[in-house]
Length: 319
Image 1 (cartoon, rainbow, N blue to C red):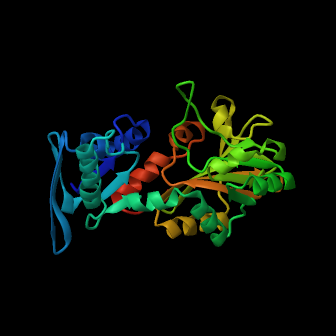
Image 2 (image 1 turned 60 degrees about the horizontal axis):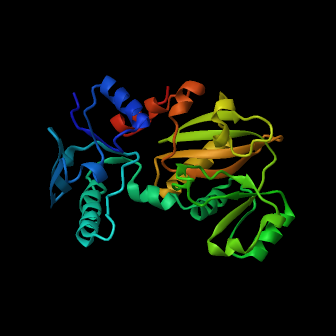
Image 3 (image 1 turned 45 degrees about the vertical axis):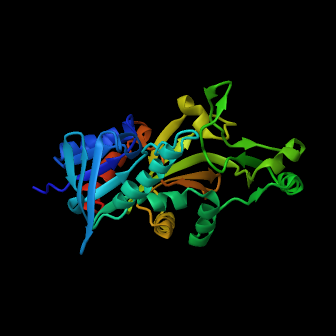
């Protein structure tokens, strides 16, 4: 039996990672789960040396230990950031050392398959880069403007129905409560000098009849059609009123998806498309570490199985 471990780097509570770990456990694949930002150095110990074939040594978390030279794959899910403290110079220094030391070793393991490499994920999170690669590989992309110029924004919005979209889905609060910033229609009369305070992304609104979420794991492509009530712009705001259906991805689109991921060095991507009445798939974005767990039950997409295949074997197995 192959006893090489799989490392799963994620936060303490992550139901999505739990699904993958359960599948790996069912296959008797050794798993070491830990959260670098939370566990190191409090309950984790690193002892790594560089040798002729790369980094070797050990990573111990509690009573469990992984041989760094034998790690078969690393699933970089959603680990906590390394804590930097507020105004505490020593804490900030330690956090940077931990990220570059532990994070650097974990990002340079010999013979390790990454799903995906943390640096590749970080590069792919920039929407301007995504849109440029999407055009390059052949996707149909809505007209898009990124600006802090109110005049440019107003002229763009006057030219066609337009949506405002955040460039980063970070934490945001309204009245001390967590809130999401969804894509929303915006007209020229709503544009004012507040646009000058930061970069804004404006995009032509697709006359869509449905949305498509495509999850790509290695070379395996799993797609679901998402139908929202009439008038809903961003389906994420209406989870309780959505219907799902597993659909086949066109072969031409599949090729574009794989070229897109290759352009960023990714092995995973959660893609969003808007579908119009002519069945044209309009590229909206790719989340290089996006959510997928709810699609297992609602659309019957075997994503956990596909991820476990890749982590266990280093290549997708096609059913």
